[in-house]
Image (cartoon, rainbow, N blue to C red; front, side, top):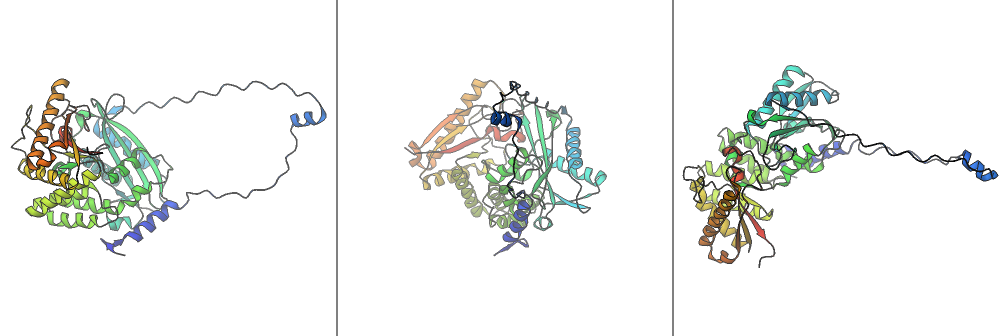
Length: 434
């Protein structure tokens, strides 16, 4: 059994899953034979006495009305309220100070970490140190996980007036959850809403630099654990299974953001070797670290691995940045020098996988919808042309489509780094390939 960063997979899973199982199955009471006397109606039946009239059942009580959504507050107020609610609601720890780790908060759709999610985390740490001495905050590492601590996770998601992540977003929905690895249970949860104007949603360096996005099971496990859990629920096993990899990815991301690219690369490679290491953040991190280190050939191969991962997941969103209102790439973007290599790798891997592709262009919601529809299609057709020029065999294996802004992931319409994913080009395998 290999040990990774000082802790084995078996040790982590035994500790975490053992905690998860503890107390989850109620003790069963023995079944006893008992004599039940006849009730009054049974006695009448036995003696021939007519039964009394039975009143008609009353109508069921109406279901309680759903609680109103939380009010829209300033960013600081929303964060403070949610954090205080969770820290106050959680049962007192058995020993103090109890260790609490924060698994970095993310956008509830993309899984990105941003200036806003980092600010929330910093705010919570300051609040706990100032007002909640029963807790000792640590970063999420392989060593801190050995303590079977409590943990905090959270999502911060732009939503519309109907509280849905669709259409024009009007506020941010903040979900904060505390779990306990010793008991395997969710012990506290709170939600709040924050004003759009107060939020800096620009992604942190490693997420802003990542060229590829796809729906990732490890991120989805985190998001579902936060959004879909109630107090008292067992912690979802798919989240527990990824905790060691999450700790390594967190350390790697911090190293990358601070310019320690050699260290980041080694941590991402170590995370890749864990059972839950098959995830987008790891593939992106390896590619980005190699690029920063100037290891061009290895970086090109790592980008090919990214493409293969996206094709396996049936969704590959690429951050091609176009000039405003144009079908040509922006020349001043830090990625633009890599676009030729990206296109060559996408074409090569599609041919190697015998894939047919639908190429779909997307735009932000800025501007008339009809113009956005046309522009998104033209951009998809441009990518189609470039792929075919690299590998002519793809000529009859690629379809182009445009959806304008109807499938925005961010939806804020800021047209800056925070909503770059809304101006993406997606490639999806078509099955069967005709």
